[in-house]
Length: 404
Image 1: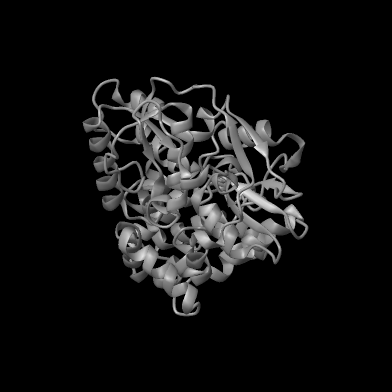
Image 2: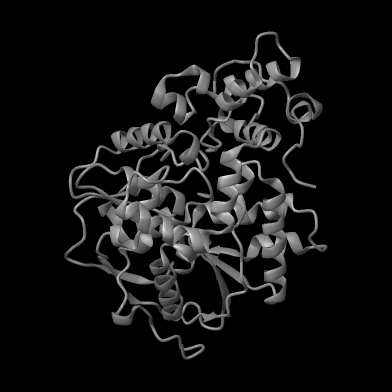
C-alpha cells in the first residue's frame, strides 16, 4: 500500500493523523514560495482550503483552476514542521496531482523514466537553443562544463574502507548528466580501499515521482531498487545526493514488502559518501574561492553529513547560515508548471547568502545543484561538493581491494 493517501477525504478528514487545517497561518513564515512572492494563495493553508472547498463542491469554484493553483508547491516540506497539527502540504499536493493528472504529470514521468536518453539530449539542445525547452536554464545547468575548476585535493585516506564492500547509488543526475561525479565518487572510494561491487542496476529513488503524484511508477522503482539490492547481497549503498538519501531511507518506514528485519537493514545500508571520508585529509589548492558557502537542502539533510564533512575539511573558510536556511526553489514539477516562481525563490536564496563575486556555493543535493547553478548571480558559481574535489590525472585512484 502506498504511504500517501489515495483520496482527498482520507487525506483531509479520514485519518486522525491528518486533521483538517485550521487556517492559523503559521505555515506562512515557513513557506519559501510565500516568502518570495507575498501571495497568500500560494501558501500551504490555501492548498488545504482549496482541497476542502473541492470536497464540499463549493458553488462557483472551478475545479481545474483550483487544482492548478493548489499544484503550485515546491514540495520542500517546511510547512509540516511549522504546522501545529503536523499537516504536510506536499502530501496533499501529490494526492491532488494523482487525482488530476495532466500533461505535466505525463512529461515528468517520461523525463524521469527515460533520463538516460533524454537528459544528455536536452542539455545539448538547451546549450544551443536555450529557449527551445521549458526550464531550459535548469536543463543547461546539468552540463559538466558549467562546473567550477576543482580546488580540494585528498592527500591521505588512511585505509578507512579496507575490507568494506559497497555499491553506489548515485542518483539520476550523476548517472545521466553529471557523470564526472560518478568518476570522482569511484576515485574517492578507491582511495579509501573500498571494494566497489558491480552496479546492481538501480532505478530512480522515486522521491520526485512521489511528489508528482506518480505513485505507481514510484512504487515500481522502489521495488526494482530493493530487488537489485537483495540480488547484490544487501550491501552498503553509498549515496552522494541528499534527496536520494532521504528517498531511500523512507523505504524503511513506507514499504510494506520487506522481509522481517529487512527494513532496518535497508535503512542502515544507506550511507553518505561524506560520512566515509571522515578520516580523509585534504589540502586546499591555490585556486580555491575566497568565499565558500554551504547550502543545506530541504530534503535529506539528516545528520548534516555533508556540512560536517565540509566544516572539518575547510574550517573557517566555510560559511553557512545558522537557523533556517533558504530553499533553492527547485520544486520538481514546478520546473514545468511555474519556472518563473521557482526562479523567484532561488533569487531570494541568493539574496540571503549575500555573496560577493568569485564566491562558490556548495551543497550535497543534485536538485539544489541544478537550481542554484541555473540562477546564480554573475560571478558566483554553485555546485556539488564533489565539484571541488581534485583527483589525480585520469580521474581515479587504484583500488587496492580489487585492482581497479
